[in-house]
Image 1 (cartoon, rainbow, N blue to C red):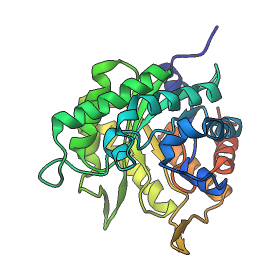
Image 2: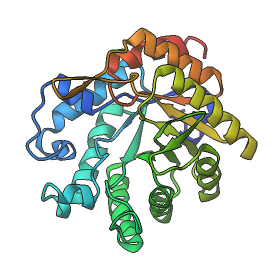
Image 3: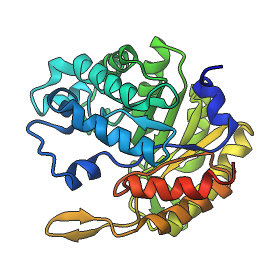
Image 4: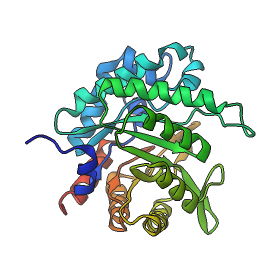
Length: 301
């Protein structure tokens, strides 16, 4: 019969993403000579093993190792001329690990700069950069795209439009929020209602949040507010959440996440119960966290 199309599958039942890539690189002591994304070229077998470990843990989809594989970020490592190569390789590696039964999301992250007047990015150049990255991912065989950890609406808008201009695959659009007294906002001051309304108008298939510096309880509160805002605007919109493994402690100048798999899985279950159908993990999460979440969530489905 074959696998459901991604757009159908994410409406069918809970859909579990993977956890952090960077955390795995650190834990496995994988040395990076240039940048994490270039490991798709330098050490593809080790990247594939990480993807496979998440699939074995229960992930329905893995994110490509291409979070920073745009020309702006790669230029900091002298790799700006290898955008398509790195992204295509990242997609092919993830595709090999996911096999026929699971899915691959092409991961697009922020550039690390801002459009004027806050930064130096030019909108036309930024559109070209995201288009170049998306074409590489598409050539590598992704099932959809996730644009994540964004904080500015103008940047995520251009990223979504760049992907939509080259294909009609589902787009997951995710911003990073932090607690702001009685509400939640991104680093650039974007509130939940503004984010959801604009992303829906752009045609994002899925809207949601990931990362951020918050407690597990805050992530649950954010999920409730996000679901409430999203359902007011469009009742059938699908929502995603990828919380970190809580707040990190700084140990020897390194962020250490101490939330274990069971506590993380309990939080993810609460987030799912308020109406979030796509869940996964961001910074500090590992295959053990995803396995614990899968055991809790998939027994219901």
